[in-house]
Length: 445
Image (tube, rainbow, N blue to C red; front, side, top):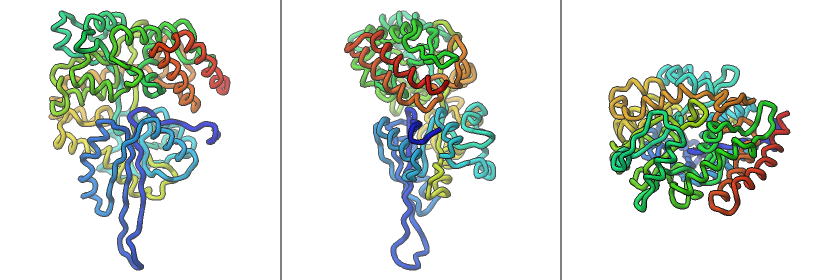
């Protein structure tokens, strides 16, 4: 894999940490101060980490943590270029399940196996096995999960009841669309779906819709399928649903924007990451806490259609401050951190889908009873090896594990966003996307 040609990209919910080490002034200084500059998207879980950073700083005298929020796209570009080039600007990065095995095999990430295994208090064996496996290459673990997730349909039970509607635990997309049109009023949208361009924005949920409609990015021989009938049908359904019952200006909306609208009671339904449920059920920040219902991702031709993902902390091989970086990584993904979140911010705010023991904490089981069981159920039900109707030559649901996918996904997402905005048709957009995808597919043959 050539570094210059195959730069990988980080997904939505991205966190990057810059660790700058500076010695105390004067000869013979006995101590050094470490400043961690943590660049992050405006993700609720990362805001929680920022709020709780004082605990880490007290436990590690001399280490300070500064948070800087950036747009996701800018963050991705900066971190990918830094890690791939070996510049060493960042000491801790948050990477997705898509990147970790490729970056680890490439030699870009520090092997954390020994430091995790030797720290008995960390209990690396407590990490959910499917998630841990996704972060390992040839028995070596290159990252640890901050939180894991699938995708589910979240709906306002009060709005459904007022409209005389009910929903099953395993709804179809056709049923969801019919309900969304009824629930779409002047006061609130029927459904919120991501429309912001980006493979980790728009195409995270849209790829799962395409798959349950029978489509796929590529066939088993890496022939692009972007303008195939099934792919076109799935995208047309998604675009039409946004036009008839979706939120205003969808091309400006991704995870955070839809979360804000649903929590404010401005949307009846939302299909997205299961991790959002913990924020929706927090009465301190959500107007709909206690009013929400959660069901499996909608389907059409498949039994399941949710994704499987984790956001993970890793240390680049080029880090000049590896020891301090590892301390922070272990602190933010530890059992103690989960207890800290629960006791300080509320048990629904505990990062889910990373540790088995999380689901045995009595306070968490009670606080998260509305969404914790279904999250685990969906995560254990999806099939990353074949999420659609036909076999695929990669493992993954809402992404294709080739370095070129970042560029392919971003370009096609922009084309689809143009269709959502009415600047082109879905067929015209996907015909252009087919050419882009095939160029990347040819490199895999």
